Length: 207
Figure (cartoon, rainbow, N blue to C red):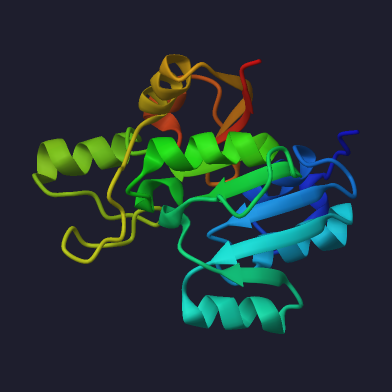
């Protein structure tokens, strides 16, 4: 059962994408958050949707923050794969704003769809017009709130656009159940690849 979490329920502590992910998550479901950071998303899902949440995080400091937040977390490198998890053992597997930092993009998405009945993937849209403008007019790699790093210290290795990811799903026979594109709190329906800053996908493996 999909339950709705209204944006009005959120305070400044939480982001709009948290509410969207909550709406894509079954109430009291079993959730795996890959690259979970400090566990803020899992904490929100636990408090609002009563999920049984588990995180995977490599960074020592973030792993410790998860523990301090009462989050069940494993410290491991996602690049090593998810072989320790059984097929379809989670209702939802989440990769939130981490896709662009993955070296083995195809493998991690396919593993998410093996381990989870559904997958949620979100990433900053490199096709946003401000990014294009910085490259075309400024002649340099974009720097923004969603892409805050300089070219020489960025953890991002596979930046992509919404159109790129649509093609990725089509070529890999991945079913897109829902897609939302947001910019500074607004949902973008017209020219999303040009005007959208954050892309959010709810996915399922083809039968």
